[in-house]
Structure formats: structure tokens, C-alpha cells
Length: 173
Image 1: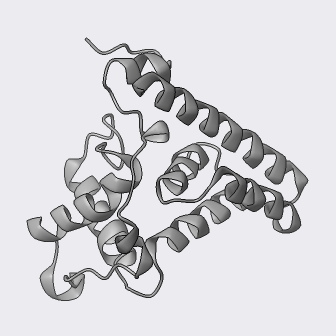
Image 2: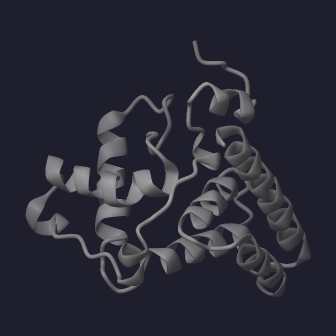
Image 3: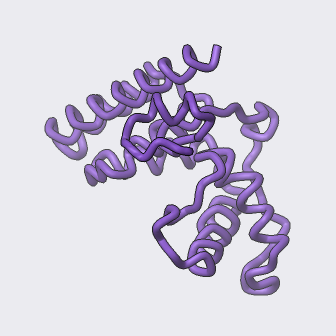
């Protein structure tokens, strides 16, 4: 039985991956070149192959195997189509590498102070190979664009994510 509290440590000990502290590693060769999907939505539509590609190569590697809109979303068709569009079509455009895209998303979320998704993307950026120091530098840079309250809040969220990751890594060792 899975513990239903917000205690991420308890969930990790039970073998459940919580999206904001999911820890994985990408193949460095995959990150060195821009990912380009072999599918085109305007030609291929929302095929099962396109969905599998978007999930396995991008979404699940960033966040772990959890649904895009969460278990309570109740609309698998919408979630699947969103995954294909976001992680297949947009992230598969081939212009920017995935590591850069992740940092750009996190920067935008920090400036806009989207506190509910900053932890998820901060963790995803760590999975993409960004160091704690590099992400803290991003948090400091946010002060120039979004102001000091956004910068401070982002840095505090980052610290929480980093601590949870360290604890999860220690628990799994």
C-alpha cells in the first residue's frame, strides 16, 4: 500500500517515484545534439508510435513515469495528445538541445513564479546534467528580469529540491 501523505521520503522508500524528485541520467551523446523527432504532427497525427517516442525519449526521462496531468486528471486522451505535442513536436524540433530547452523552461517559470511546477523542472534540469551551482546562478539571474522576490523564492525552491534529491540518493544507496 502506498503512503498517501506528502512525505516524499516515505514514498521513495516504498519504491514510488514522486515527479519532483525523480532522479535519472540521460545519455550524454543524446544531450549533445538537438533531438529531432521522426514524426510530424501535421502528417502523422497522434499515432501510438509518436506517443511512445515522446514519452520514452523525453517526458519520462525528464520527470519519471507519471502522467502529464497527474493521476487525478481523468482525461488520458488529453494527456496523451498533450505529451505528443509538447514532448514530441515542440521538444523534437531539432533546433535546440534538450538540456538548453529545460533550462529555458525553468528560467521562464522562475520569472513568472510558477511555484507549483518550478520544483518539477528544477529536478528535470538536474536530471539533464545542470549542476546545483548552475541552477543557483539562474536563480540569481532571475532577480535582474523578474525582481528579487522571484529570485529569492526560486532559490528557496531550488534548495528544497536539491535537499530532497540528496536525501533520495542517500536513501537509495
